[in-house]
Image 1 (cartoon, rainbow, N blue to C red):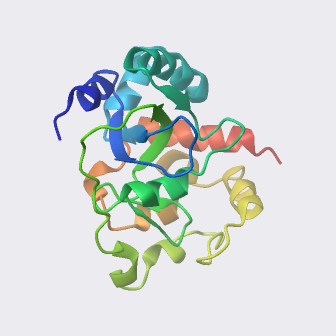
Image 2 (cartoon, rainbow, N blue to C red):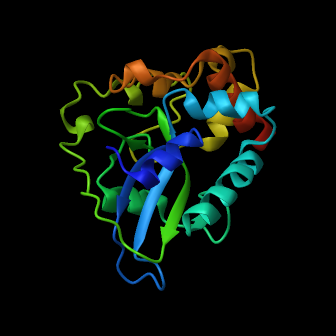
Length: 208
């Protein structure tokens, strides 16, 4: 969809993933969720020298928010905001058996990096999340692909996952096998460099 604000977000290499008019949020009339979908954001992150992605996100999004007259909040910053609930309100996905947001186009290969909170509303039609793709997914391969059975559909065993990737395995190089098993949005799978970046970040955050 074309819109000056959405185009401005894209200029900074973020994807405008969804938007909605919230209820009960003081001084906020409109929320736009932005993040990663496709290669653009990670390519810019790499061009900018990499580093800690959360820090880089703040450096890029803060001036973007100022330019647009919005306030930026981040999923990695306290007080934690209900990004999953916001995704439901924006009609941009469903909760997958892995606990991640699954998008009908991007599958599991997207991520919310920030939300822009505006004091005014915009004339943008709300997206429709469509049918939940996991409800018709035959066999739900994501629940059976993990070599240490870290997922059971309701619980994620972080300790088992972290212990495994600290050992001799292919997950660090090729990515999470459960995520890779999802048949939705295959064409948007992260490239190896991005997969390895995120796997290393997870490993560093969960020492054993």
